[in-house]
Amino acid sequence: MSVRKYAMRPSRVLRKLHAGEVAYCTKLNLADSRSAEIAAMSGFDCIWTDMEHVPNDWSAVEKQILAAKAYDADTIVRVARGSYSDYIRPLEMDAAGIMVPHIMSLEDAQRVVRSTKFHPLGMRPVDGGNSDGAYCNVDFNDYIKQANEERFLILQIEDVEPLDELEQIVALPGVNMIFFGPGDFSQSIGAPGRMDHPLLLETRKRIADLANKYGKFAGTVGTVDNREELIGLGYRFISIGADVVALSQYYNAIMKRLLSSCGRPADSIYSESSKEGTT
Picture (cartoon, rainbow, N blue to C red):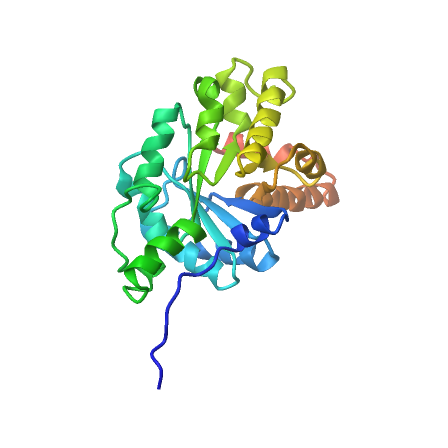
């Protein structure tokens, strides 16, 4: 009987990106692992679960990662800005990648790389006794090597502050992807919601150009309708849709049909709800 040799789970997203394909993601705000499972079952390459804006706890995130893995889908965790422990816990739960929001400078990016990549790219603290290291069953040096190769770091650019150092940030060894956040960026330039603002469009293109120049990947949010435009700009990782939007649209559509069949205006349910709230 031979002893089984363990290895880290390969990243589906990286496999597609390195093959020159486009990887598609969807965002989850809900904490339930069944939401993650449904998204993974539908065929997305990965799910993006959030800890920056959403009060998910670690146990909920761990279950979502497991649910996605059952369908060979990656999980990306957008972390809350904090200590190095906040960054590496998702990786040790076997998330395929982490997204760090609001990178503000080259120095900021360098600190993140140091905390999340192993030697020689960084000095991430080593454990190996969790899911990503197959509970100490992956050889120490293999674990370090595979983690650097099969787990990816996404830095979000969504402010004006890092623009002067953007090229150095993109070129930084250990950074795998730059993700443009247009919503916060529009606010940062004093034009909230203006997705057609010239500086926003210029920065979106610049990020893709620099990513391709330095052999990195460019990611952003998109829609089915504008994905071809984004691909044409050089984006290869596109996040489309969100669980809360899907549920809202589904239930709103049901109520609209119900009210219409009763001969009532679609907005009548909201006026009635507000009246009930005052009693």
